[in-house]
Length: 576
Image 1 (tube, rainbow, N blue to C red):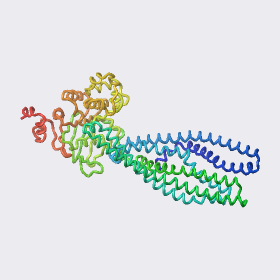
Image 2: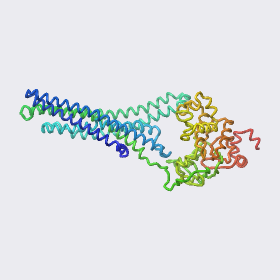
Image 3: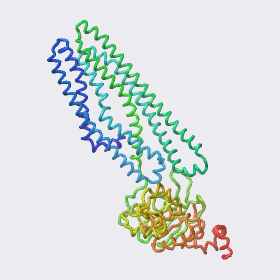
């Protein structure tokens, strides 16, 4: 939580001004019952209209001053709280951008979205309300009791009699509320997760006619959120009648004993009225305390969830001995006895993998689903670190290369083509900041998508829907490839990124890649694609079972020959 509070430091002056102005409002509010007692005792009871007018005018003047203080307080409180929320969201987003994939495994996507939106809003609103009214309520209670005792000690102590019980009760209620609201935010994560999965998988849901099932799943998550929220709110609402009952009982006792005091001459009528007025104001402030309980309970729960993100230790960073001057020139890639398993999983996905790809070579990687192909790819740009062995680029361990240098030399096209909302030109230039129009067109031509883009009504300025929903699979793949090519990478990684392309288009693409003089690592299920590679790796259960050229594997590998025969019955007869 200390990490969260540190974001308030730049706005200390604004907060101090807001608190001072709030104190002005508080002082005026505490002064008014005292002045009212003076008007009654010195003016009304003595029939002195001049005193009534004088004190009444003074009350009106300080009330106007309090009103202006409240307006200015709102301005400074808003600035401090909104700026605090802005900085907090920015810091969280930047922190998440620096997460490694193992860091991401700690938080679900829906949870991160909730923390950056709902949780930040909760703590932001708490700061505003603290500067505007929350601090005022407890101070009004304390100040009201002090003023009541200063007016008449006996009656003031009667009014204060229930306070110890209320303090104990409020501490208990706050502790319980924090636990409830922590659970509420977790249930909100679940609701957001169901919504996210449904929006992403809407086509599949419709194709399988699973709408009713998904509605029930959402209703279950939504019901859990409702029940947890209702439990928290019931606790808060239960506290309000308790607070009001105790204070109203105290006011009745003040009136009871006050009547005797006035009759015996121990107190004046105005003093009794003032103490009752203080009691009424304290009761009103206590009614706000139930809201304060709820807000601070949510603040504590949300603040801790935010702190969990900000305090997460990034486990994949530049090493202390990194060579900042090293630049990748040739793109030679070498794996030496690499073994790897995902965090929190004891099962290896890669075991003792070794191969080498000289600069400019094309390496095709074949294997069944789950053989470790995509996992191997993620080790090259250090999305994960190896558990044993090492990955070298240009004969240098990638852990000794700056992450920005390493990843800046790689063009990576993932298995699932991911595009961003915006124009086609923006999506291609996303791979290279400040790319020129000529570079965008060149990359599109080499990715075999230029002619298709030209056929769109707005060409390169055509808008892409969310995740490329208005494009075909092949179009999305080629735009993703253009985004990688515009970087002019030293290492190009294509993770089954040509699966939606026909053989002719794929052939033109592979031919165009030769002009980039980059090392190309290509995951594919197509023998026709692998045939053009300088070396083919046959991966099975996380191990390289065979490697060599197409001709070498066809002659020496029974597994490769079986794959080839399955895909190319006619070619089989040519090579037998």
